[in-house]
Amino acid sequence: MSNAPASIAPPRRSRRLTAADYQALGAFRHALRKFLAFSEAGARALELTPQQHQALLAIRAHAGPGPMSIGQLADCLLIKNHSAVGLVARLVERDLVIRETSPGDRRRVILRLTPAAEAKLETISRSNLGELNRASDVFRELLGALRQLDAEGLWTDGSESRPGS
Image 1: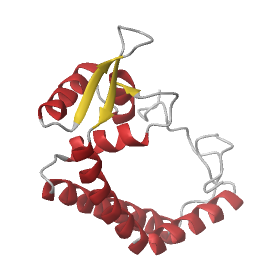
Image 2: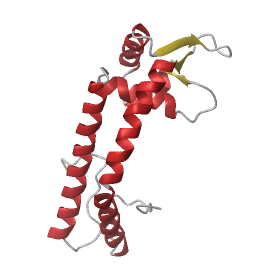
Image 3: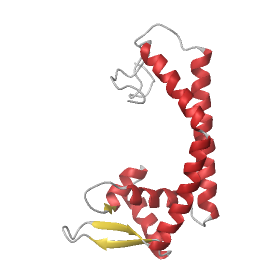
Image 4: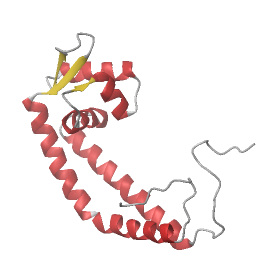
């Protein structure tokens, strides 16, 4: 029996990853970590925790039919429902989120951003988009490396998905 996590399948192809493959992955991980550190610093500069910023962004970015619920926020942030309840309570205390009972289902709590939250989120998001633009070369290089791996048939997860498509 393998000790590998269930989500990682054994390789299907024989070619070993090259130094360039690992360098592309390493550069991506580094760029991602730099971006996350940048984003977290931007949130802290506006007196938000990184998780509060992520919650505001998730609520604002929600594309569902109607406002986001606490359960949907928990799913989006990959946290437990009771953790999302506490996070929302802290945001409500700071007048950043409005918590309402859904008119269609009285058991469901829906979330809306206040104008103060919208302003903070826009400031952080503009800064983050600028940082992503500055890091775009690394992401383009990674997509090129992924396309090369795809052309060589090196995916190990058995999926048919293609990067960047």
